[in-house]
Image (cartoon, rainbow, N blue to C red):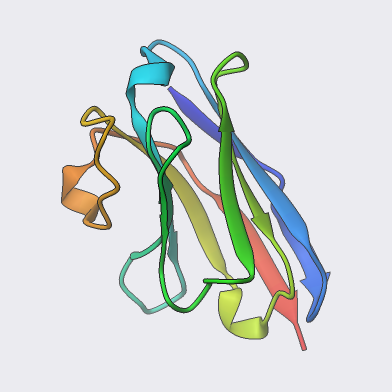
Length: 123
């Protein structure tokens, strides 16, 4: 089970940190990703971190503003979002990929998904 938290309503330029707590899976062996879906749009990749935290990969739209990290002792993955823009408004989902070494941006490669947390950025 993956449970996201930390979403909310913020103003442009603000920061938020999302968390995703995992249970019922060998968290430290999974690559963990964040995806988002805006109203009327397809789900899109945001960021991914390998099982060890040693490798990360970001969508161009968030590179330099968002940081993904994980704490395997707490079975939790984080997404720190800085300099938020109105176009970052979406439901944000975390996902787990059993191919722990992979930093894959393809949603189909992920085995487990959370229920999502809403992030709204006002201008």
